[in-house]
Image (cartoon, rainbow, N blue to C red; front, side, top):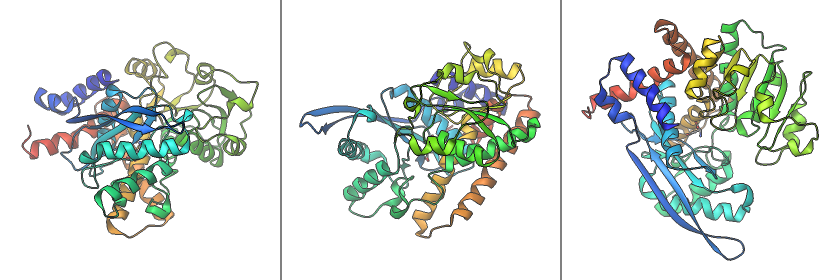
Amino acid sequence: MLLSTQTVIHEALHKLGFQDDMFELLKEPLRLLKVRFPVRMDDGSVKIFTGYRSQHNDSVGPTKGGVRFHPEVDENEVNALSIWMSLKCGITDLPFGGGKGGINCDPRSMSLRELERLSRGYVRAISQIVGPSKDIPAPDVYTNSQIMAWMMDEYSRLREFDSPAFITGKPIVLGGSQGRETATARGVAIIIEEAAKKKGIDLQGARVVIQGFGNAGSYLAKFMHDAGAKVIGVSDVYGAIADPNGLDIDYLIERRDSFGAFSKLFTNTITNKELLELDCDILVPAAIANQITVHNALDIKASIVVEAANGPTTIEATKLLTERGVFLVPDILSNAGGVTVSYFEWVQNNQGYYWTEEEVDQKLQKIMVDAFDNIYRVSKTYKVDMRLAAYMIGIRKLAEASTFRGWI
Ligand code: GLU
């Protein structure tokens, strides 16, 4: 993940005319904190967990990005993810650099009380390097508004003053923003609409396949369904279901568990591999990284791939898809709606003045459409794919800010 990101960053900086010293600065995060901390489990035993917080670059402003709870979290992953956060903030022109955190754990096998102690322990362990104008966490894979609430409470207790702007993705009553819960999916839906226009596909009746049914995947399925598209396949971590006539999305949302799992309710499931290769117009990988690789890129039948997850398509697979004329919209553009509304939340917390859902949606729509148009224009001007174009726009601000600060 990190290596291929660095390859694209190198190419992007080169195309923009920056020298190798800039690449040296931006190829890795400026800071990575690894922490080990104890958590009391419900059975009385103590377990030691390992967590990370990576801060890519704070030349533009404080760093920003989510915290994931997942058994595969490691140093490499948070480093790559924090770089992607920098790129997302560059693309959407937010006054942040990228950050990312994570705890290596399996939240599916933990109780609520254990998760609370884990969340609070993590905040105590990283408290020195985070803060409202330093580094602002948010939800990511398997974390949600309840976890943000515990983290905010722990941080406020440590600092001894109310600090809502320390973290975003909070419940509304604790200073969360209208529209943050659905923001990632809204952003993806806006991008799908723009991509469909470019490809001459009418969303009415378009066949959509979504891999993953977490925060992004489930709300997106709903938005696509409401826009008149036919969601013909969805999956969770255990399996997938498909119906060429369209699935009952409301039923799935009602029946899924808090980790997005629903497939155990069905007997006629297909595999995630089969799901990705379904005959459809729009494919949205909204689960985890490395799902479209050289092994299945030639079997993808969609004409548009919009990446809602972080890193679902490898660089080699991106080339294969592009050569075949598949229009791929990269993660750092299509899933940037989450961090954009997180920015709105942080602004509202700092002002103590709150916006309506309409205001949030309107502002998000403008930022996403402008970002799409800019990247599309750069991809045409430089004759590069959408991923490289997105990297070029995303990295430019960091390179310019680092130059003005005299770092290079
Ligand atoms: N975790 C989300 C992402 O990967 C959102 C980050 C944020 O809101 O700061 O973009």
